[in-house]
Amino acid sequence: MNFRKIIYIIILPTLLFISSCAKDSKYIKYLQTQIYNCNFEQNEAEFFTFEDKNNDEVTWSAVCENIDDYNNNECIEYSENYNKNADDWAFTPDEQIYLNANSVYNLSFSTKCSDNKHSERIEVKCGQSQSSSSMKISIMEATTISSESWKTYTNSFSVVNSGYYYIGFHAISYANKRELLVDNIKVTKIY
Ligand SMILES: [Ca+2]
Ligand SMILES: [Ca+2]
Image (cartoon, rainbow, N blue to C red; front, side):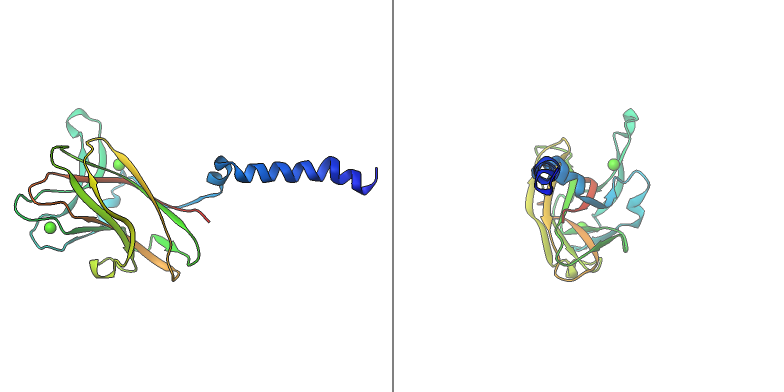
């Protein structure tokens, strides 16, 4: 068998197969790398930093929902203030999320409100320290949350400088709403 035949019989079909796999989202998904995963079931909330920016002594805290029916689910929750708009941040723990410049990442998380007659609002940013003043990179614009069932939001983002980053979940609900909950935070490197 000459070399040209080998190319046609073995190498060419292999290349075509690899090329078709690369176009298949299943394989692309397989290539993604998860770099952070927090479902709050191991007391991860203890290592989060909460910032009560509007200084009203109402802010984020760790909660366990459905505790009465033993369907426990740990998550974090912004509680309500009947008179003042929310301005409260929840930051991911110290040195957990290292991001490379020139890479693209996905942030996904689940969120819901406790009463759909009282929609909540949230935006998500990131920065290089656990404080509102360093939250300079927008990941998710201000979004109204009006579902009492968990919904997952996924947004891609990237950073200019490599280093440790902190994701900031910013409760911006209007006054006289109820609770805003966040769970299942994942950061995945896409490429
Ligand atoms: Ca959970
Ligand atoms: Ca507050």
